[in-house]
Amino acid sequence: RYNFDIVPQFDTPDFRQLLHDLIREQQPSPHSLKQDIVTSVWRIEVPHQTGTHSLIVKRYNTQNLWHTIRRSFRQSRAENCWKLTQLFDDSGLRVAPRVAVIQEWWGPFKQRSWFVNQYMSSVDLLGYLIDPLSPGREASRLSELVSEMSDIFKRLKQHRLSHGDMKATNILLCNGNLFLIDLDAAQQHRYGFTLKRARRKDRRRFMKNWRDQPEIYAAFDIIDRPQEHGTHALADP
Image (cartoon, rainbow, N blue to C red; front, side):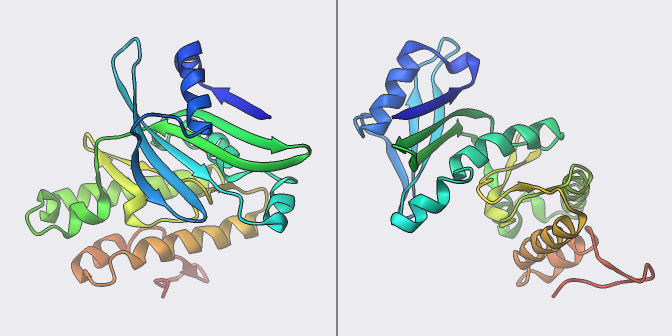
């Protein structure tokens, strides 16, 4: 059996049929973006009353029996993306809008799951900043991006959230604003010590993007720097 959650503006009989076709792999000509044992990702075009929408469909595959049993007692990654996308949005963090989530069941056990969000015409932050022809190489634009990333880290801390995979390819620049995608590993933390540990991990992963770009690294290094005894700022290795 399958459980569906769909945002109201997309919840039509035609769209539900499209989701059923996706499950049965009968959706015509999806554009494959990734295929591996863990995840499969497609881009599809969907007619809508406001015009054609491009959507990203991410299917999380069941790997083995132990994985099936373990996942059955907690949220699937698709369910986590569905929940955290809304939490991030409510916290003022820009994310690709969610569209639908599907959970497959076999008796009491969770099987595959699908997460659908809107496609964003954008460039990722890594490509934008390391392209020598990009206007992002200008000091003024880099300064603006540093300020926006600083605000993202502050909002994550304020709302006890962590992203879990702060690769620069998971940060998109769209219409002049930064958006976070790929919330598979995102969390909202109940305890301060887990939040602090996750924040350090997010920062280390974010800074790793710029290890071969000293000018960019130095600019971003001011963001969320950990303090030692409240006096000396130390960069994460």
